[in-house]
Length: 616
Image (cartoon, rainbow, N blue to C red; front, side, top):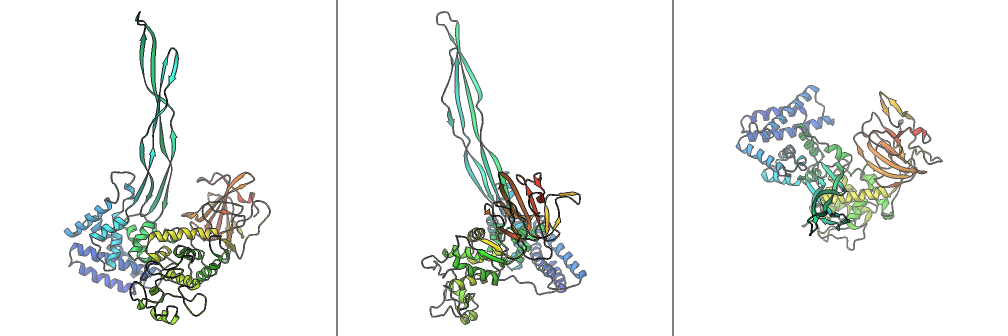
């Protein structure tokens, strides 16, 4: 852990909407006395402040009258439209303002090769840069040209190309009255670059190619006559024909995945909290852009789609890749601080290999199993430089830590908080992540641990491995295993069956929550997880492929609260997959379950009524 100072908490504006109205009127009067560029800056600041007031109102912190609320909404919209008019359209800007706007557009255009049609769609939008600029104005930081260039560079997409040999093969065939002969095949290499991967501010794209070797085709012939030297009579004709074929690589698949990791990393580096990120999205949406950042952040992106199991009701048996002696510390810390156990395990592994590193002291002086700087542990009032504290200071003393405002925690109840003790260090890491907003912005919290995006991704990758390797034995209403290949996916009443419903076809069955909580969903048979992700329609969904007596099936478990399995994982009949939930397009919490033979497709033409396959 190399962070010196924890991220400053988001601060809500402690004002009521009435105060906001007075503030807006006062500011508007001042605007008429300023130049166009200054007006734009003031409008940006006012937009942010008023939007924060609006967010504060929406979450119920204050309770102004509806009429006043509508008035503030209208004012916010007008102000934002003015900002867009100034910077997006260039209307009303003075010389300095126009120069700044032109520079934003220049940096946006330079983020890709505009002559390449494959790159153009991934250009950094000027409106996104402007949205970030507005947050900077709110923090009394002036986003100059250097800042604009830095943001454009950080959000610049990367394009990866591979070399493919699209060679040409050829041979000649020479024929006469005596027959035909072929020459050996010769090959002429020709390497071409093809795009294989794109990482942009809002997406990851992967392209795969397959070989296609053509057939030999005649490309030309030439003939010459052979004459009798005595009579001059043509006695034979020699014909030589050339045949060629070409190896090409054609696009086999292209997969575009919504991914805001790059944007999130940039905003984390600026110290933005969740509310700031919400406003970046809101401002960009108001300018006409398309963005799903916050939804991604709070579903698939927050923990890479693996979150949501803090407080699991049951027994967790770790896989062979986690030392069992540490599980109690992870689970206890998870219950106390709401940080997923497998994320704590991943940090423990990334930092010190589960406490196996020889010294457990980093190059910058971070110490112990979870690598805390002494000043972070005991409090920065004791810092003597570089995050270190005086050797005479008892950094395990709870009183010293409390006085210094440090993060150190007593995880095992022995009256001390020792950074070299696994229980204490793991509890402290959980407390640190929770204090940095893990519950609402886990990527941002993990970023604060090391201030590097590679670190966040590495931790999340191992977290996914550790979570998938564990066995979850859920308590509560688990469906009873039955004889035969299949069993029910969950207990409860079928609230909607297979067949026509509301003028449309319902391709599965719905099992209702029925007023219960933490209802486990299990695999109906042995199989392999084909997909585990968050869908806008299915919500949290798991697809499992089964091979039963030589027959292939694919089952679908949709609208889950969370997911305990990952793509490629082998599962057993009755294995816990997650809890019943209400994610995606739903009217209430339930499990939507489908079965397809042999596999799922977008038209669901292979759907089978589940009650004809398994006991319900």
